[in-house]
Image (cartoon, rainbow, N blue to C red):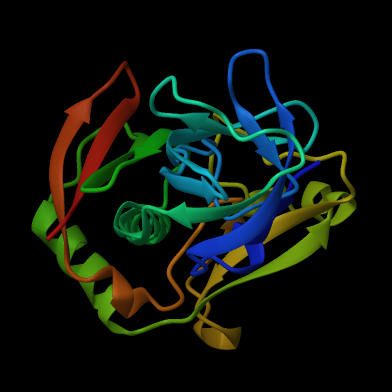
Length: 238
C-alpha cells in the first residue's frame, strides 16, 4: 500500500519515502508518494528519485494492484534497493499546469452543462467530450463566461461522502464514461466555490489548484464532432 500524499497536499513537491518493492518490470513502489498516478484523464507525474549513492529520473507514475503507486523510471538505470530511504521530487512545473488545466475543465462543465463522455488533461491544454447534438451558437460567449468564473477567485476544496450518499444522489456524477470508484466506503468530491457560491461539485481523485484565479486565462479551441451525438471541446491555457 502506498499513502497518496498528493491527495491532501497537492502543492507538496518533495517527500522522503521508503522503497517497499521493485516490480519485475522495473517499477518502484514506495510507502508514500507525492507522485500522482495516471487516472481520470490526468497524466502520471514525472520527476526524480535520489538516495544515498544514487539517483534516477521518473518518467511517469501508474496505479498498481490494490493501493500501490508505481514510479516508472525514464531510462534503464540502476534501481534503488528495497528498504532504502529515497527523496521524491516532482517536476513541479508540469504538475502545476496539470492542476490548472484539470480545474479549468471542471469549470468547463459548468458553462457547458451537458453529460461528459470522455476527456484528457495535458500541460498546455485539455479537452472534454460532451453528449452534444449541435455545436454551441456562441463559442466566444462560453469562453467569456468561463474566464469570468476563473477571475472570481473561487476556492477549490475537497470533501468526502459515503458510497451510499453517492448512490442516493447520482446527479453529481458528470462523467458518463467513468464512474467514481466505490467499494472503499467513501468517495472524494471536489467543490469549486463555497456555500451558496458553490458553482461545481463532482467526484474526482485528481489534483487541483487552491483558487480558480490561479488557472489564469483560458481559451476554448476547436469544437469537433466525434460520433453521432458527441462533440469534443478543446481548452488551452494562455
